[in-house]
Image (cartoon, rainbow, N blue to C red; front, top):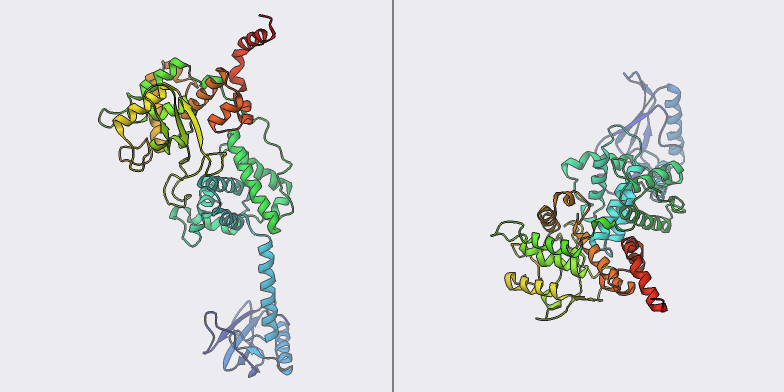
Length: 490
């Protein structure tokens, strides 16, 4: 017997029906009536039967279908089969339907949609991932979602798709309603995202790979952006393989676009010694006299330019970690980094995460010797501005953490003060990280071993060699003279 008949509609009338999640009630008190005609063009033949006083009915397009269904119900009665009081169906049909539903659910769990999988994967990785890593996973999953969109009417804009996925994968949003501007996009993606099995199609896999490598405007993403997205996508696929959703990583054999940006630092971004001094002087002139926006950050940028510190490392620098003698070199012992990730990505609910140093164990520090010019700069900063309540050297006007937008604006405002117009429009020192690149290059040019440069900068010798080899081409003659002297030819 089947609990659905072609061309039929079924309903139940009466009192005493179970509500909510109550257990089903079965009864052998069943009476099946004869087929009758009703006023309906599509289903004029109606069958009625009573189960424990509750009337059930089913309408059919033809008398043959109605008679066949009546015969099925009467056979069930003759076998002594109990009927469900609520639906009016024989127990065998109820069990068959429940088994089919369980099987369908199990099959669906083996092949979740990209929308469902993204949320499942993020929930699994959230607890052990840093805030920046969480944000990176969300960006990668959102980029891949553009290639995993099914066909459907009223598809949202690609920009809205990315925003919707980035919102939805945050575990704390699981039981929340989407923001009003994302409601339609979330609802559409929940219904139209492709299942993971679609990645077996080469066209789908290639489109996902394209989305990882390119921006929405069709231009290539930065090399580091693509590498981060692909690394995160690979982690997601490793989890999918572990769960049995897919057999292999669908983009494992796809190469990075050959035209993506190359790795070496552009020598044009580097400042010489004079430009560095003039730039820091220009920083001190940024902002009004009362707010001291620029003067508060002279030492901040000095740490980047003379100690190759990352901005997030400077944000977390404390006075207790600074050895600043009156004369000679000092030492900054770096212990933590305070990257900006956004409130929704951090466990604390603050914009800045608190992490150990990059590429090091959480409890490992990194001593960095600093030249007398930076020592004097930091001593002057402490004398004028003091420290934040928790001992940090650098703070905003309210005593809080220095935000990315704050120091970025000061950097940009200082460039036209420090450099002539033709240099302002050039790549020279366009962003704070260019100050770190300048310091690392100066260390290399001074003859410091690559391994020591890497240790001070908190990176690996391989990264130094890959990114900075092109910045040292003009030292070839000097290197030749060193070889001649060592070989006794000079």
